[in-house]
Length: 95
Ligand SMILES: C[C@H](O)[C@H](O)[C@H]1CNC2=NC(N)=NC(=O)C2=N1
Image: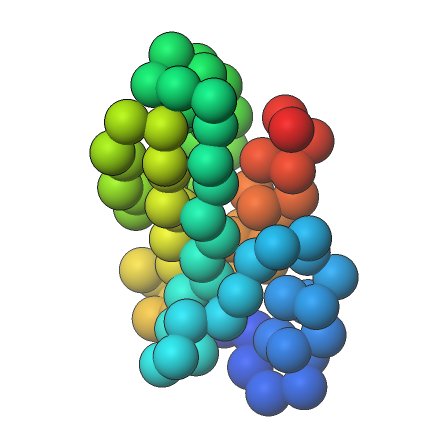
């Protein structure tokens, strides 16, 4: 079981992440990315997929052409956990 991050700690953790926002229901974090074209966007998604598989923590995402929208949440925690924060940080490291 993974602990859910809530309240002040949740807001502080999200504030430390560049460009990520808390979803309105406070149960997930989200970020929108925009690339030059589809090849750039899909290349990014491929690199995220490799990170996600290594971490056994996977994004919910949406892609149209050069736009990628990522939502991170932890099903086991029914909300945001450190695993989401860690994956968001690892994604930041790809940019
Ligand atoms: C069995 C497996 O470890 C779990 O289903 C993992 C896989 N990837 C996951 N990804 C995300 N985003 N949240 C989870 O709770 C989760 N759980």
